[in-house]
Length: 130
Image (cartoon, rainbow, N blue to C red; front, side):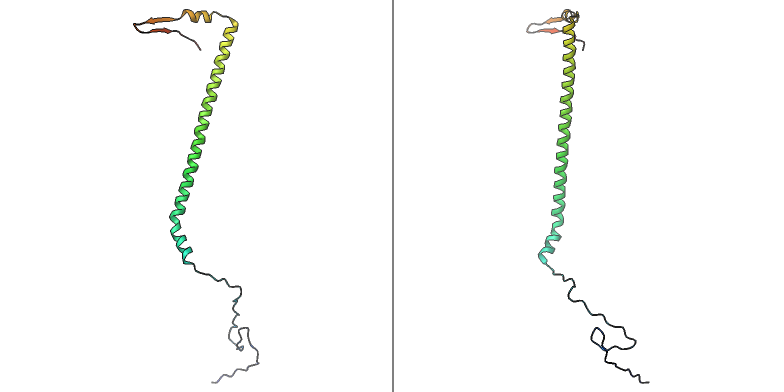
């Protein structure tokens, strides 16, 4: 059996004649296609850079940790200084109150002294209630 096809002269987008039963070919988009260029030096930098980038992350984390530790130490020292100042201030206020009231606590303090003498040294011990 011989099959004859009629050609009407129409052409598809690909440039060939249209045949019944055949799919039309789509025209290739050559203008907007993405073209990749291979650069060997960039590839080498990328592959050998893993270690370098890892070390950079380690160094950055180490510096951040040191900075945080330094700040924490400074806060602890500042808090200790503030606590000492507050304690000294309260002791000074108590002393001033005692001094102004003129109570016998100061004379009592003078009477509770104990003196110990040795060949080379003399030690005076006094009890203070704070």
